[in-house]
Length: 605
Image 1: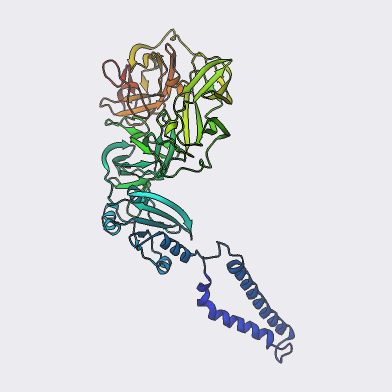
Image 2: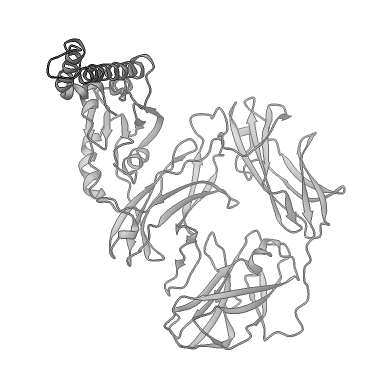
């Protein structure tokens, strides 16, 4: 932005130009010996044009700067920002700026101490230098200028959030201002050692918050190492999941190095860097137990977690569980982006349903249907209400969920007046349900309210094995299924085309599993190194394990893509099931976490 004072350096030439224009207009006669009348008239007109252009420009400037100021033409009011920050701080407080701001320094009257923090250096020496300066401070104000590329990994917000509470955050004078109330002594949180390989990267350290509050960001630190040159600017996704595995918050960021931050696409092997994440739960999230997970991706491709043998072991790594405490502030509304059908209906005395959301309009019999209820407490000391959601088809209840809100972990009698609570419930539709239009209804005590209709699709299930299977088998996995056989069609494979096989599973659990397990299919060389693989939901997602009913036969086809194209020789096929959240494999009665298939495959050069 160009301020008016910046034009002072060209004021002299402007005065000369205006003087000459005035001279042409007022001192040039129409008739002058030796010069044509046309030339003199043109000189006067040129001077007039200059004066008119200057006057018009001056008028526009006065209008845009003084009469109708616009942010594109007015310099940010740093003076007001400095005065505002001074009103928020005292002599025991600090103001941190990860850039040089001469204007703020000039206008800031104190008495808080101001420190300019150079973040383009390694984290450990920077934190060791900064800690003595902020030790003992009761409040820290962090100012970040959008035009300055500083602290892109959010190291300073992570440090302050780990040692205090974000009281407010606002935008002023082209800067984000975050105000933290600190808890002393201020410490640098330690990272727990980790050894998790994800593609070309390794997760070497994990730092989770020692205390988590519902209305505050969750400060998380991860230490990454490049085992080989990644070659791509990978992103990390931190997911916060509720007890049902539903993602309620996430924070996705490009992995950056510490010094002169560059993305992973330009990392060399051996480079190590901390990165920081601050996922925030949406307003109304109940104070219960959540799970933190991490994945690494680029575009639409998510990297595999690798076991010690280099075999894929899922797409996400579970960092740990955290229990959220109730927030100090009660949210005045749900987030504007909340997907909700408004209701505003009092279901019981003091218990208001603001709205609801159903995750799908069509569900298969045996499938899951999630209904999210958005509650508000209109009075304190509510009774421990037990809401119930039902799915009714032709007068028959085909699915239901009854219990205290928030998976039973946050009952109504713990709510504060005015509190809003998100209550997600997952119903399992009966595998025997007929097809048709079903009604979702909500019941609290004697109050019954219809919500909306969904279509239940009756699916055709197989309960008999094919008459012929290439390799019949009978190996059970974790009480969930028995592998009855495999079709492979050929005993040779080429790296130039996928290796196709079909597994035949029989569901043996009395009730459908709560977990949608993933099938892994691996082709290994003699040293158990991965040659080809495919991981995916059974039957390409048509039959997730949570829909299996006892006795059902699932034909599950996989096409293994080759990872090692130079290998030739004998290879072994192994398959199994694993929990994609916990990354735990189901085991056979002998304790093995995989099943070796009988056909031996020869990979041709």
